[in-house]
Image 1 (cartoon, rainbow, N blue to C red):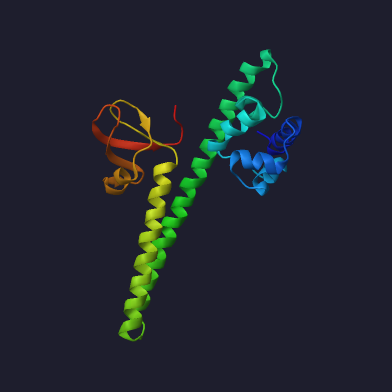
Image 2: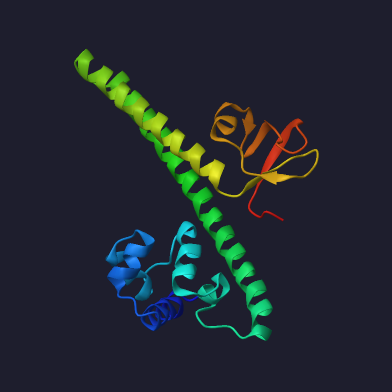
Length: 203
């Protein structure tokens, strides 16, 4: 999907409907700057706004993703291609987020250890030592919390029993035993507790 092509298409369809950017923004309950950003190719509507935008412009989601009005014979071909493109983008996004999780996890752990080391071996007043330990602990807890949120949302977990791939709830990820990105969790489909492996793809 080319954002510039999609943006130009949004602008063309908006003008064809006789809408100003302000009017379209009011219909979608977003800012005029958001509409301008889409039309300039600097962004794309959030998934929650795709269908309302298509309804407002009287186009299909496939036409929005393709950046043009589709003839009947093109529709199925473009629909399949758009699904493939969205899947690839989702997988790339998941890979990036999981790499970011690693970086955040290491940084949080290292900074916590550094602060513990400084508080233990440097000559400070006891109050400063306690403050360093508290700041380090907060940094670690927040960092790990963000990492767990990323791990929950990026990709899927595959049940070892029925091979169902799903996104677990945050508390499942938080309280489950784990080894790397393999977690002992209950599958929402078969109900069995097994070691579920993290996977990028839904298929």
